[in-house]
Amino acid sequence: MATYRSVFDAAELRAQFNDAGINTKFTASIWKYVLQNPGCNLDEIPDLPSSAYPLLRSRFKPLTSTVHSVFHSTDGVTTKLLIRLQNGAFVEAVIMKYDTRLGKYGGKPRLGGPRSTLCISSQVGCKMGCKFCATGTMGFKNNLTSGEIVEQLVHASHFTSIRNVVFMGMGEPLNNYTALVEAIHAMTGSPFQLSPKRITVSTVGIIHAINKLHGDLPGLNLAVSLHAPVQEIRCQIMPSARAFPLEKLMTALQTYQKNSQQKIFIEYIMLDGMNDEEQHAHLLGKLLETFQVVVNLIPFNPIGSSSQFRTSSDQKVSEFQKILRGTYNIRTTIRKQMGQDISGACGQLVVNLPAKRTCENTSLITDIEDLRI
Image (cartoon, rainbow, N blue to C red; front, side):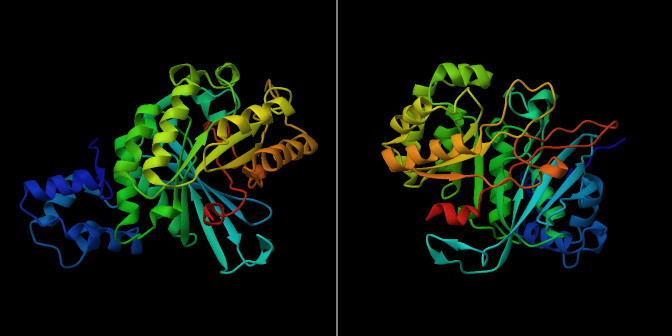
């Protein structure tokens, strides 16, 4: 059976157009039409050069993935999409809805209104093997193409208007670097027009990719899954940390921050008795005190009865936050969990078909725009 490329695979589409002598400016109009008419036939796209139609028919499809299943959380704020790829594999994307008019921020009433964040997957499975994350139990299957990454945004856009995108779903985004960069360039261009400041890429700390990131994608948000203040503990819970020593990672982050002049988001999962004691808070504070960061404390989501970890108590999480804030003046938030009842919360994404269909994804404590202030 022939394998077609997604029209949202920007590099492939533009390369084919260049080879055929077709102006690549038509890419944006193709994307706009498909976004508005997801079930369309490529022959229906108006106002293209006549030579574009046979090329599109022979090599491309409007969408190479389909929404297989949709799961809604009981509170109505989280929607998980189980997406079937052309090769038969599945990934998950999670939509998280916020109403910024509710509550206060910084002691002041919030402005704005309803808006949605989409958590996107970049790989089928993951090779990082973090012991607290369900996706790691899948192992690594394959990278997504840039088109398959963008198609998650296309699918989600038919449920709600997406304001922010976070690459915190299945996979390590910086291990699929070329496709990631190409997908984000597409998302920030026409017709999606997302601002780079509303896109966040999360990584366990792929040093060589972090060194390139600001040059290739200036203005976006970088989130680092640190999860421990010393190398020894990182290696215990994140086997990939052996390849990316903490000292070298922090040096790379210093350079990144110097070049980007932006805050870095630090993700820190709270594991009872492993990394949540007062001594760990002080070690983390000393590690980060020269950086401009926001630390996001993440309550551990159980990933099965066999899990070797337990969730830190609310009191421990609160004390940890107080030390970082009070002693080291580090802005520290506690992630609000969303979508646990549909296995759509942080660390729960794993696709296991056909016996069951569950996934993991990430939830932010609040909108990424709030954390930038």
